[in-house]
Image 1 (cartoon, rainbow, N blue to C red):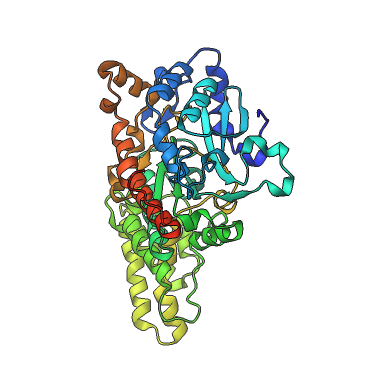
Image 2 (tube, helix red, strand yellow):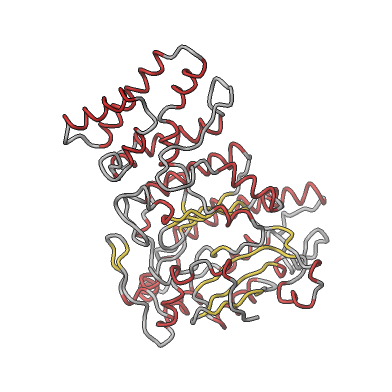
Length: 458
C-alpha cells in the first residue's frame, strides 16, 4: 500500500535524505555534502549504485534470520509460527518521499524480490502484528494490533548541539563522536546489568547517530507502558536549555543508587579521563556558558576561587579548570558535618559529569511498540554510508567517517568480484558471529525448553 506519511512517522525525512532522493530520481547522483572532514563524492550514492548494493551486498538472509527468530515458514515443526515473519511490518521510502507502509514478506526470497522491485531509498522496520500488515484494512480495527517488537533506542547528535563545541547540525567529526562512544557504553551497562538483557545490537545511523536494538524475548514482549518505564529509567539528562546538572537525588540514602554510580563511572572516563574525552575535545569550560552555569549554584567563595584561577591562568584548558573544581569538591567533603552536607558533597560534580556525558535518548522512539526505526544495513542518501553494526567492546575502533559508502563498496566489488573482499565484510561478520548466532542459540534453547523441540537439525 502506498500512503503519504503521518507527521509522527515521517520524522524529519528531509534531514534523513529523502529530499535528495527527488533529485536522484532524475538520474543524477546525490549532491556532495561536507561530513566533518570528509567530503561525499558524487559517485558515493545513486539509484544505480543502490540497485547493485541490494542485489549483491545487502544481507537479506541474515536480516530474515534475525527478524524471524527461528520461525522459519518452511519448518515442519508445530512449535514454529510459520507466519511470524509475514506479520512483521516494513516501510519503504521511495524516491519522491513516498512512503509505502504495511509491507510484509513471507520469507527472505520475497523480502529481496520486493526490495529489488521497488528500490526504496530507505527501509524502516516496525512491529510484529496479529495479522499480516498488508491485510490491515480487512481486519476489525481492534483486532489488528502489535504483539511484539524489539526494544529500540535512538540517539541523535542533534540533541548534543547545546554542549558540543566542535560541530553543529548535520556535521560530525571524531571529537563529537565521543558523545556516541559514551552513550553506547553507558546504555549497554544499564541494559545488561540493570535489566539483564543480553542480545543488543548497536547500529550506526549512517550520518550522525546510533540506534540500539534489544532482541531478548522479554524485551520484545514489553507493552508500551513498560517500554516507557525503561526509557524513563535510562534518561538521566535534565531537559531544558542551559542545564548543567542532571536531576539526581540521594533520597535519604548515604550512597548513590548503584545504577547512577554505574553510569557515573563510565561517564567520568569519557568526560574527564580519556585523552579524547569531552573536556579535552570540546573544551567546554573555556567556551560558551558552561562554566558559568556550573558555578551558578555554588557559594560566593567557591565562585571567586574559580574565577580568580581562570583570570590568573588565561592559558588553562578545561581539564585544568575541572581539576580546580574537584579540589573544591574535596574540601566540601572534608568539611561536611551534617547528613545533608555529606550528601551534597557526594553528589557535587557527579551531576555535572552525567549531564554532559549520559545518553540523550529520543524517548518517543522507545515508548511505542509500533514505532518505525531505520533498518540496519540500509544506505543513508545524504552520506552514501551504510548503517553498519558497532562493536560496543571496541568503540574506539569505530570511526563513522571511515564507514564504507555504497560507491566504495561497488568499486571494491567490481575489482574483486567477491563480496567477501569488500569493506562491508567485517560488519556482516560481526553481525553474524557476535550477534545473530548467539541470538539464534538462545532462541533455540527457549523453544526447546517450552515446547520440547530439538533444533539441532534446523
